[in-house]
Amino acid sequence: MAALVCCHPTVAAELLIGRASVIDGDTIEIAGKRVRLHGVDAPESWQKCEDGDGATYRCGKAAAAALDQFLAASRPTRCEFVEHDRYNRLVSVCFRADGRDANRWLVQSGNAVDWERYSKGAYAIAQKEAQARGVGIWRGKFLLPCEARAVRTKHERNC
Image 1 (cartoon, rainbow, N blue to C red):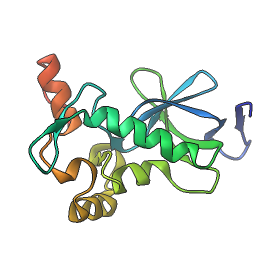
Image 2: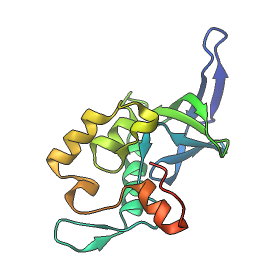
Image 3: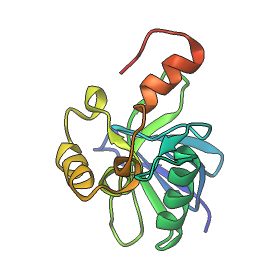
């Protein structure tokens, strides 16, 4: 299916619809346009986390694979524009063809955290559910993705 980009005259938001390719746990691409999922922060592809038994695994890679599987189950993906980020990516809330919110699912499944700074707490309940169930990154120890980036780049934490 070809990507559809449209703007309704009465709606300022851009709508992007098409087959999504997963770049990482919180970034997809549709028809050559990078889309950062709004209000969530997934582990980086290089990031390692501990599982419940103390072994390490590539939680960022696992998050990306989980997102790919989730989106593939009901295509196409529809993304509703929120803003542009500092890298000029579209920042959006995205949905599968069956209407399921991919951003919320990422947090609910423990593959991302609610990035309250941007979400204003929209996914706080989903995160509490994931923590209570001990799923995804919540099954063991991990650095918040923003903290892991700060450690890796030796910059101030941007959480």
